[in-house]
Image (cartoon, rainbow, N blue to C red; front, side, top):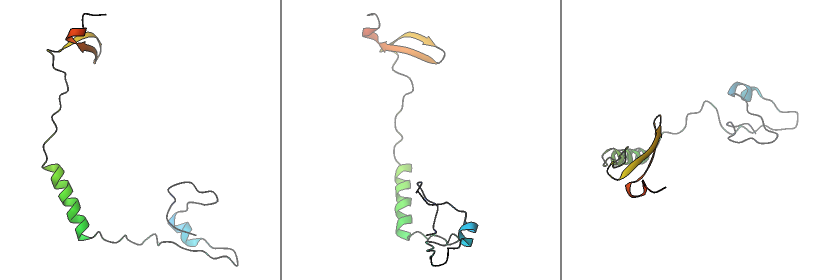
Length: 98
């Protein structure tokens, strides 16, 4: 069989470029089954699929942005040590106990 490139390794199979796949011949008495034409274009997406995709993108785009805080609330943490851009922090109540 000659078809699209395999997604996983298969014993006894070879991945060929389209030029070599087209010029491949079989021994006498054998038959080559060509699965797809490499130059064939995939079918155009259905209009319903495109509308569903547009609706999903629009829904995400107009949604609320997540609230994100890169730094902890400084009133509740104590910095124990730091090196470069890294910090060791703990809760204020536990900062004095070691």
